[in-house]
Amino acid sequence: MFHHVKDLQFNARVSRPDPRFANLLLEQFGGENGELAAAMQYFTQAFGAKVPHPDKYDMLMDIATEEFSHLEIVGATIQMLLKGVNGELKDAADNSEIMQVMNGKAAKESIIHEALTANPQFVMITGGGVTPRNSQGIPWCASYIHSNGDLTVDLRSNLASESRAKLVYEHLMKFTDDPYIHETLSFLMTREVAHYKMFEAALDSIPNNFPPGVLAADPRFAQQAYNLSAGTVRGPWNEGEMPNLGKDFEYIADPIAQARETFGHTQLKDDKSEELEAAAKKNKEMSLLKSSEVKKAEPKGVAQWSTYSESQD
Image 1 (spheres, rainbow, N blue to C red):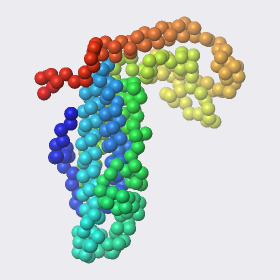
Image 2: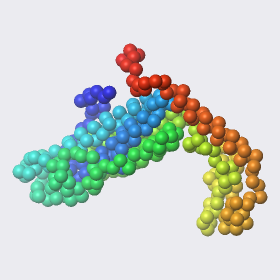
Image 3: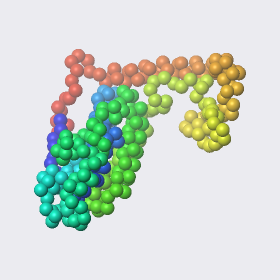
Image 4: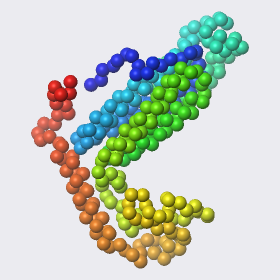
C-alpha cells in the first residue's frame, strides 16, 4: 500500500527556465538509466524475494519506493524548467521571464525552435508535459528492467544500475550552471551511491552467493585465462590467485594450439574427475538448499501475502 506525501523528499528548485536542459533531464525520467527504470526494476525483483528472503524484499520495496520519489523530483524539476513553454511563451512579450533569461537576444520563435528541436514531442504530443520518454522522445520500455529471478543475480544487476545512474547525473551536471539544479542532482546522485552500498551489503549477507544461480562451475574450465589478442596484458585478471577462490588462474598463451591438442577441450590431460564429482555433489546440495528455502517459507493451505499484524503499523 502506498501513501503519497505531496512534499518532495528533496526540495527541488530552479532559478530560471531552461527548456533545453529540461529535455536532457528527461534521460533520468524515462531513459534507460533513469529513476522510472530503477523503481520498476527493484519493485519487480521484490516479488520473487518475498518468500525466501523477506528481509531483502523489504529492502527492495523501500528502495523502489524511494526511486519513485526521485522520479517525482526529476519530473517536478523538468516542469519548472519548462516554465513559459506551455503558456505565456506563445504570447510572450520581449520582457517576459524567459526572454529575460535569454537577454532578449532571440525572438520567441527562435527560443521555441531551440528548445524543442531535439525533442519536438514536448509540444506535438505531450503539450509541454512530462511523460516517460527519454531526451530523444523515445518512450520508456520494459526491456530496461533486469529481473532474473535469482536474488544474487538481481543484486549484481542493481549495482551496475546504480553505477550507471550516478554517471548520468554527473554528466547532466556539466550542462547546467543553475546552483539549485546542481543541489538537486547532487542529492539524487548521492542517493545512487547509498543504494549501491545497500545492495552490496545485501549481497554479502547471502551465503553461497557465488557463482550466481544453483549449479557450480565446471572445474575443468573455470580457471583458464586465454590469450586471445596480440600483446595481451598480464594482470590480476589472468595471473595469480583467483579472487576469493583459493585457486590460481591458468594462463593459456596459445589457445589455438590448446584447442587442437585437446580436440576442442574434450580430451584433457587432467580430467579433474575428483573435482567433477565434488561439483556434482555440490549441485545436488545447492539444489536442495535453494528449493527448501522457498518451500519452508511457503505457507500451507491458502496463500496470503499480508498478515496485517499490529507490528506492521
